[in-house]
Image (cartoon, rainbow, N blue to C red; front, side, top):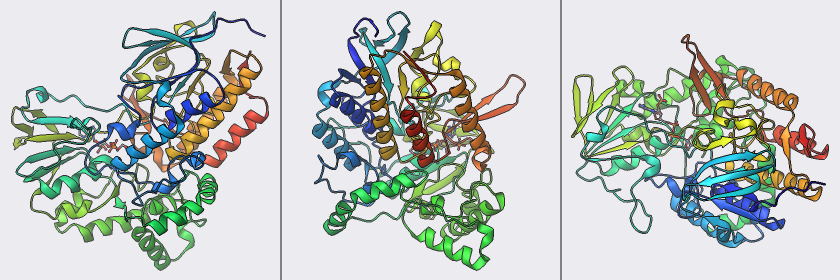
Length: 544
Ligand code: NA7
């Protein structure tokens, strides 16, 4: 029995995205006081901030979202197989209404620091309005892709046109994206990851000239979006429980299982037929349901890479441009595979120009555009689709201090060290949802984030029921988990890339160290382990 000071709130949840609002709802449901905090003026998280034209899910809409809430959102209908951002934002808003969570949120507020008070075993959270408050349990749901990467470029501040990051798109008073008609404009897009690949074909439709400044091409495959009819939706609705059970069995909670065979176990003709079928199907299938050794065997990977390269050559008319669009620096699927709609065909338009900035990098920006080598490009608008400081970026931007003033950013300097990807020793009572090394960041976040929030809620309930005020991992449990996460990743071809889920650091002697930020052991294995831990009275945690 402990006699600690009562905190202002039992739980503070940082973030009002899909996972954060569900976590806040669950904590409220078990009767604990909870405060949610978000920098945005409303709910939505990634769907609030990313309003660029072309922004949409590339998870099947019906496989993303609040399965647990079907009871209170039985009438929701998706209009497209892969919903666009405005629909996603409406969905999260309606979910927030139905859950009644807005009243627990303080919006337009940033968390500046969180400091663990050892005597009282609670967190002191300081906000950018100057106020501080305390909570027993701190839960971050800050999103794996919310800290934008806006690189420094010489002269950019002098540019007289419009320049913005994709997640900071200018909006009107209703919050709708402005400046989406590029007629008569010369537009530059920097970055060809999943975001750039969504933006480019849309901008190409109206821009006078679109210059795509590409550092590295990605392996992109067709999204295959289609509208969903009323009948489709009725069928989906009847299948909700089955869909949830199904996606829970797949490694990433997307509705795809890998082919049980290795690529070498079938003939060349069969392989081509399989790849062709997958290429023509919607969504991630080609990445997630092709041969089981795709990300383990270089030979297997090369079969698929060759197939997709051939498709790029077929779709892009200019052979020089086609070659520039074929990746040579990473295996297929070892980085995120952007899902595209008319991406490659955009390069067949006279107004679209691909500029390689790897061999000749950007020199500087000027008042009127950008200089690359000796060439100057006049621009009216520059869109930075330069990605995010993935997974840990949003946590690094908060000054999180645990025992003895230990700063999280320093504790994780060489890569995260966690137990179950949920807690780190030295930071008691702090849970990171969809954070590093847990089974949710490399996953269909709509599903995995919710399952994780349910697990954390049960753990907090367990602690409250027993009047326990302190939980942190044992060093041995954390070491074992972290070692296994790194080892699993090292076995894959993903370990050689600089994808957003890899932390790349250069050591003083010039060596490059790549450490994974995500767990690649698969959702089922992850959740099995979490269930075992819970069943065994939170084995591996130090509780009192
Ligand atoms: P990504 O996938 O990280 O892509 C970022 C892109 O920006 C990528 O092409 C980068 O090239 C490029 N980049 C980054 N910094 C620079 C600089 N300094 N100069 C030129 N080019 C640069 O981010 P996205 O937003 O596209 O997608 C992130 C996720 O959001 C995505 O997986 C979805 O799940 C949603 P590089 O490859 O590093 O050479």
